[in-house]
Image (tube, rainbow, N blue to C red; front, top):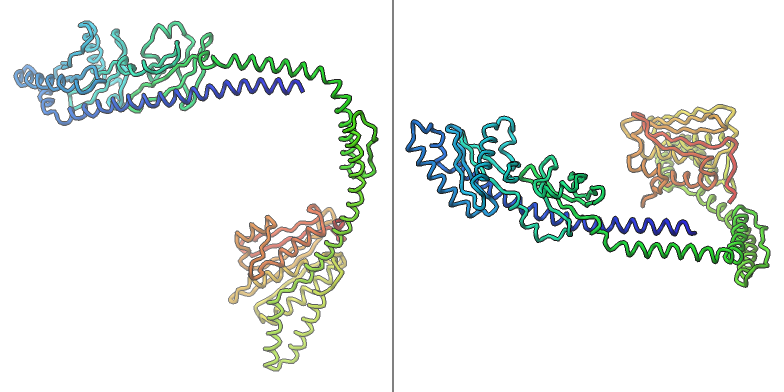
Length: 561
C-alpha cells in the first residue's frame, strides 16, 4: 500500500512539473509566434519597397553606365537615387539603411545611419561591398531571403534585390528588431534572441559566454530544456522571410518557483501515509484482511463450480459475521437457482430448435403449387404425380419433429428431392452433382443444414441465359471432421452480404431473404460450441459462391445448456 502511494505522489509531482512547463511553453510560443509575425510583416514592407525601387526607378539604368564616359548623367542619377532613398527611409522604422550598388562602377550609394559613428558606418558599408563582390558564393537563394551580416559594429539583417548590374538593398539592426521584447517578462535571467540558421545567437554575447552549455536548437511547436547548472526552457519560431530564428529562453527555476511548496506537501503526505499503514497494519490484518481472504478464497472455489463451499461463521467482528452468513445463504440459493435455470434453458433451447426447423419458405410452396396448376392445365398427369410425390417427401422431411440430428443419407436424399422439384420448374436450365463416400452416409448431422444454401443458389445465382450448376461434395477431414462443400456457378455473394455473413450478422430483410442462411448459423451456434463447428462463406474466383460446413463426425457433443 505504501509503495503505490509514494510512486503516485512522485509521478503526480513530475506530471505537475510537465503541465506547468507545457503551459509556460505554450504561452511563450504564442508570444514568439506573434512577434515573429510582426517582424516578418515589417520585413515584407521593406521588401515591397525594394522591389518597387528595382522595377520602377528609371535612374537605376544610368548607374549601369561607365562613369568616365557618362560622368554628368551618372552623377545626376546617383544624386536623384540618394534623395529618394533618404526621403523614403523615414517611412520604414525597421530599416536602418537603404543602399544601391553599381556593379559597373563598383560604387555603393547609401543613406545615412543615425546613431552610428563614422567607423561603424564604414564597417557596415565595407561588409555590404564585400558581400556583393563575393556574390557567386551565395547561390540562387542570395536574393530570396533576408540574411545575416556580422560586423564589428554588431549583427544586421540584410536583403538585396538584383536589377541587371545594379543591386538594391536594405540593412536592419538586430537590436531594433528585438526592441519590442523589452516589454515581455521572461524572468530575471530570461532572454529573447535572434539566431542564425546555424543556431548561433546574434546578441547577448556576454550571457552566452557565461552559459556555454546552452544549445539553441529547438523542436518546432515543442519546448526544449537545455543547460547544465542553469537550465532554460527554449521555444522558438522560424522566420518566413529570412534565414534566422526568434527564440525565447525561460529559466527553469522561475517556471518551478511555486512547485517546491507542493513538493514538501507531497513529502509530508508520503511520510504520513507510511506511518499510518505501519500503525494499523496489524489491526487491519487481524480484523479485516484475514476474514476477507477467507471470503475471497470461498468465492474462487464457488466460481470454479464447487457449490458446496461454505465459510466458517465465526469472525473477529459483527460485520464479518454477517457477511459470512450472507455469503453462505447466497451460495445455497444460487445452487438451487442454477438447477432451475439449467432446466429452463434446456426447454427453451429445444423450443427454439424446433421453431427454426419448421420455418418454410412461402415462395417455394406457392411456386410448387403453381407448377402443379400449369401441369394440370396441359393434362400432364405423370409429371403431376411426380411433382406431388416430390412435394410429399419434401414436406414430410421438413416437418420432422423432435429430431435435431438426422443421417447424412436422409439429408442428401432430401436435397435430391428438392432439386428434382426445381428441375421441373426450370427444365433444361438446372444441373447438379452430389459426391459423397458411402462410409459417411450414416453419420448424423443437423436437420436441414444443407438445403438453405442450395435454395439460396437457385434463388440468387440463377440466370435465365446461363444454365445453373450446383455441386455438393462431402468428405472426411483429419481430426474427425466432416466437411460439406456447396458450390454454384453463379455470380457469388455481393460484397456487403459476404461481409455480414463473415461477421455472423443477421441478413433477414422485409422480404425474408437469406433467412435460411441465418437459420443455419443460429442452429449451429445452439447445437455446437464455436470450436466444434465452422461455417465459411466465400466467393470462388470466376465460379460463384462457395459454402463450407465443418462438423464433428458422429454429431459431436451438443451444448449442455
